[in-house]
Amino acid sequence: MTQVGYKYLKTYQLATVIYDLTVEFCEKFLKGFDYRRIREQMIQAARSGKQNIAEGYLEKSLKSYIKLSGVAQASLEELLEDYRDFLRQRKLRIWDKTHPRIREFREFRVFLDFEKFPSSPNTPNFPKNSEAAANLILTLGHQESFLLSKQIKSLEEKFVNEGGYTEKLFRKRLISRK
Image (cartoon, rainbow, N blue to C red; front, side):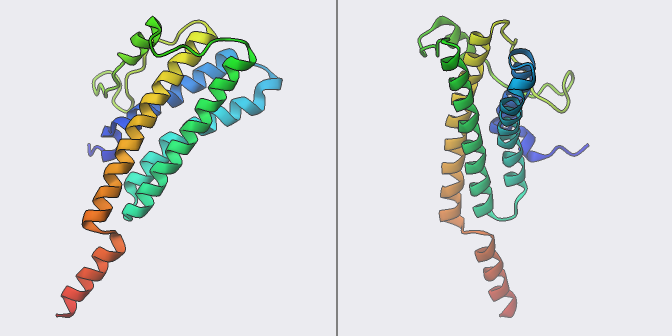
């Protein structure tokens, strides 16, 4: 079976975990009709982050890949803002990075386990209370944002050094004319 390259990206794997945990969070802590809209928005923002990484990776155009990676990062930030709002509106705390549980959350490492989960990464244990669950996803989201920033920077450097798809096609055209 051929493996698709984007599934090996840590940004994609972590975005998948964030998406799955967001669905679980919304089902558990945002029940009922009154929360329907925010539930849909949060799930779609998490999904958008994951899907834009995959779509960008599959683009022929490096420029489009960079753009879609930026869209993924923007969707993630939208989602993180929803988690901050959730905590603020309920007078719950956003834990400082020195909080013992945050340190524990930061130790989570995403990976693909092809024997147990052939198409999805491992997932950390979901906390039972909403404050801990939101802080877990915020922590993973900050890690994802950092990784996406590095990925975008790397793609930009590649674009500067190698050019884009159109430039490469033009060079091939010039060579074929000679």
